[in-house]
Image (cartoon, rainbow, N blue to C red; front, side, top):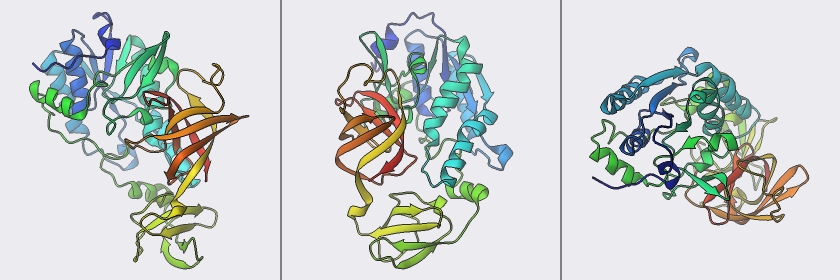
Length: 373
């Protein structure tokens, strides 16, 4: 049998604790279940239904997902349950997404889903009856000086702490990450050894609530189309048209329909419905060094109230990527100012700036970007 031990944090738990496992039907949550059972735990599996069938969208994989969850539960003799959080998801995540895009911002629905649905509404309605909630996220739990922190995963490509950077201390104190010490190849190896039915199932792609639905189709349904100009930033010349600024984001390269490129979206004038673009494989206009955020959210503690220096040395991400940037985070009244040592590509208001300790092992928190330059 392959030996991939649980993290010391999970392994130290009493085997009689009750665990609700969020099972998606994918291989990651299935292996999380297998590892817990191997170690002597008996989790109950929960499949969260957040499909938007009532809004004209069909989750193409829901039936297959649920079948996989049922097979995993049957294999290990566990209970499973499907729970419908569709209405709450619409209120907390989909509405936020539509409103953000309408205002010219770049939303991150997956971040809000983790905070408000998977570890929010689910906890309020079901998870509160369990000691812990486990998930198949690539992240870890770190305890230092008696405090619980969100830790990164060893697989930098799969690390998902940026999607968890808006959870709070109460949530991280209850979440278990059984695959958080593994990389993807190890997860696949365990799935094969355990003969899991989804061992070779492809990873899900795209935004959590859309499944296989095209994102632009979703935006068109709720925001429609409106012709606008595409202007070359350097010259002010009109070089094309678009169907609405909400279909585009800062840093975007594909989908502009322009010849002679590559072209990058470097600015949006939302009231005038204008996109500004720059041409080249690496135009300087797509980069910035500084970010400003309000209402910065710290997961475990605010380092500035804990006596840390201001500005604070941090590692930084502004999108889901394996690379960290070196930066400083400074509190300026109610505003948080981030200065990166390296150029940041495509700083888009509405995105989350996620900060880590300088060793890139602990996620400190995140703030929604208001301005970047």
